[in-house]
Length: 220
Length: 220
DNA sequence: TTGAAAGCGCTAACAG
DNA sequence: CTGTTAGCGCTTTCAA
Image 1 (cartoon, rainbow over the protein chains, first blue to last red):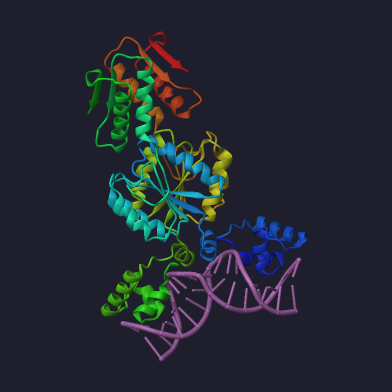
Image 2 (cartoon, rainbow over the protein chains, first blue to last red; image 1 turned 60 degrees about the horizontal axis):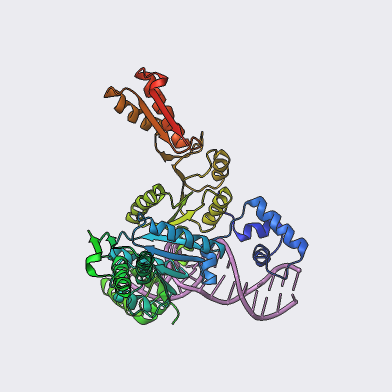
């Protein structure tokens, strides 16, 4: 049994198919009785509007792409989950793309998503230096928002942590309590996040006149 | 600048647009010189095929839906990641839907995905008793595979853990070493997985004649 | 090897 | 209020 179309239910409800379109989309200008008849027929035939066809004419997919570098890093599922929730509330769905820190994959996902005609793109760039990516993205005339990390000097909107501030606040919190010495543990200084937090940490130390020998920094 | 269509590049390459279609899809029956000319024009105009339009005529979206109950549970990202990788290898992308254990959301995602005309559905059912869901899904004439957990008595294909076997193997491993007593720690016995593992654990205990007082079972 | 034309399922004028 | 018609961008016969 092939999927029912608007025409099938038009026939069943004895109306033109534009009327069906109006009815199922809750547009004005349909007599209540007619609308009811149409909806019943739709229900009976188990009609499901064809998304791609709609997208084609509406020029809207109600889909946004989310590109993340590493879904197995718990930060990103958390992020994805929150985004998904907001998206759903606005009747949008998410096309989730996981690059595994592979910049090549990242690019091909961007191509993929533009061909899929997503209405917008959320991207957590995998490269620390994503300036070139940013430039390419500009040509796309596609709404883009960076999350988690933004290319230096981008003119696009972004939503990121203020790592420096975070490191500073954490350090200040301890220093305010008058601790004798203070430590910083970071997984790797190749991470921009950690580098930022460390910078904040140092700034706090300066501010609180915490001498270098009172600072223990451990980076793997 | 609105997106280029097949017609724009037809004009630029001085061919009919059906020829462009053939060229960009690498179909036979296009002279090499023509194909080249077309591809150049496409490149120059930065042509991107319109996915929805293609899907409409091809009746194929190259997308599969993945419905999971809880993306913040590390098991599911891991699963999603693996699935995504395989999907991508077959030129498929994933529409990821996170239900948050909400059966209502689960259902609406199914509706959503069928309207989006996904080519198939992977679903990790959130309810332990998903028989009704299974029945509804049957009417959909959409390829469905269950993952992680399958409704009892489903006729659909599924890929799940053998929890009983797992619990049994773990217990046997310890019992074989002749331990005096053996423990089982599970977060909650409402989890089918944990219940299954516990069953396996008990079976192993029987088999190894491990008396009840040598078994310590902790369930929160 | 190429082009013309029909049609995928739907929305949106435009008429009645 | 309802129907007719013209596309959306693309693939695919069918002719030339």
